[in-house]
Amino acid sequence: MDIATGLSSIKSALDLAKGLKATKSLMDNAEVNIKIVELMGTLVDAKEELVEIKSQMIEKDKLIQELQGKLEDKNSVFYEEPFYWKDLEDEKKEGPYCQKCYDGEDRLSRLISKEGFSKGSHYCTVCTTWYGKGTSRTHVNSRRAISKGFSV
Image (tube, rainbow, N blue to C red; front, side, top):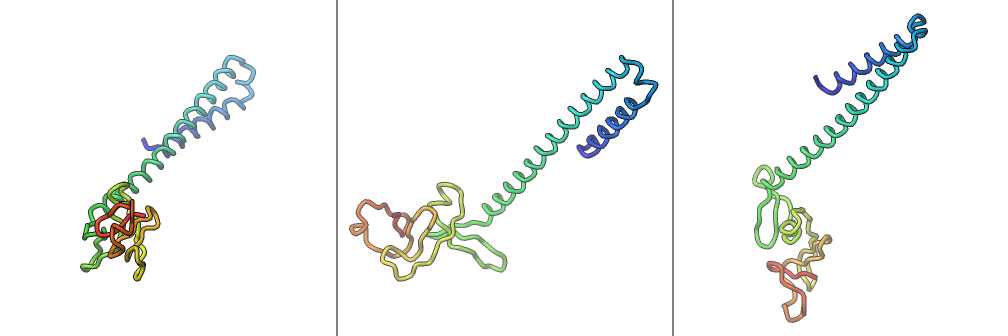
């Protein structure tokens, strides 16, 4: 039985219990009336549990889709020094992406082309790393080199 069927069954049982409670001849019997109220309470609790389970299943389905997307991304990402690229159809590629972000946090952060800047030719706005030909290490002081670029 799936959750939707379970919820429907509980709703039907709850409606039947309400119908019994409304029956005049049963209303006179206090013991039957108490049992019907208990039954209704139990059915409401069961319905709430099923709603919670359904909510958890929806969250898990979203997580599964997210992880499947990440797995597909992981299978299509490749490294060409000093960048990561995403392999597309027809031998095309998308990118470049930051090597530091992908290696450290498994995150594809697109680099911005900054041709003509003395610090490098590509820049990551997430981790502030510069890539490409730029100033020499002596001009960068305490900054450490990342592949062919420099971290700011």
